[in-house]
Length: 456
Image (cartoon, rainbow, N blue to C red; front, side, top):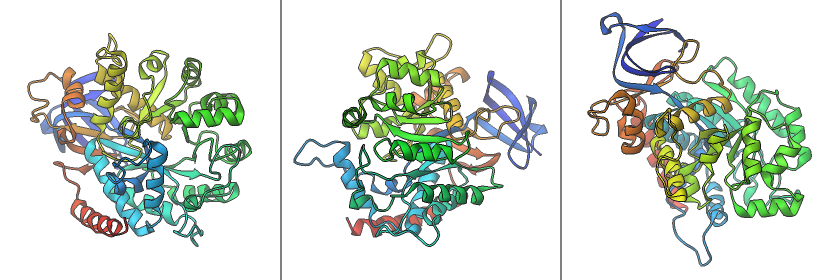
């Protein structure tokens, strides 16, 4: 057991001064109480807040950030961006994927994320053939998480069709096409690999309703534990909604709610284009809306009705998706600012009892842990894990601010440089804004980017 002392720390009952946490070797919080620095083995100067989950990431896309920012002859959209992405992923090797993911997870930690849900669909070799080891690519994600120390919920993706109604896959999708039995075998092997590792969990991700048919989705749900996290892209684009209506006569969220056991293990990624009835249905189901504001803005997706959803009692989580830019503060800021621009008013997502930043942060903290398979472990509490982010009290964005204003000052007036230290399961993985493996990880990433750039 190690005794940690904190000048200021955000606990489940609010900000507290001069607190100690007794943390076990495995990272579990054994006790919390008043104390002094002289009693502690480790002293943290600054403002400690709970570590938060990044619930939706496509690691390989970090390497193509900035490559799709040129308009074509027709109106540019998600669908034209997707063609650039398909061209990019054709050449990535397993080694390159591990290096890219390592750089990405390093950046996530330095931005204040302590865990990630990796929505991983790059399963096969460049010509579409299966590797001798079906976990070859997934294993690279596991290795990157282990090297950086970030908590991981690996979400292998089931992707079988190119469109609603079981349309045949396209050639550029060959690296991620799988049959149902093949996919369930992959999931089982990944579960076996992650056993005994408290930092790594396994869930599943049927990619979208256009990529799986009803029979395949039912087979998947029947073949996994009933509490396993299940993430799905849904209602991200207006075209997707229209195509789903043509196929089934129902909207995507409407179809899912009527045909599948929608409950608290589901994370509905984006869910941007929903009706009032769908919005309330998601809230009542206790499923989580996985929102990715930076990516949704970059792709021109639209704006999720977050104000109404939270007022319905809905649950949210945050993700960085295409990883165009990694910043917890910016994800929260853009989520709120999108609502402000839509409604033409301020502090849309705040309420009378909590500030705007506090309400969004608290909601994303709880929802993120829920859909990464860690419910009840969020926040800094006895029995939970010591995942925390230490904010620099001497940073210009925080200077002179009372503790109750620290979260808002970071999230609305600061950036990643506010983050000083980060702990995952009690272990400091970022110390004084630096990771022990940072130089080696970044050096390898530079090499890979140079290699990939030569082909684009």
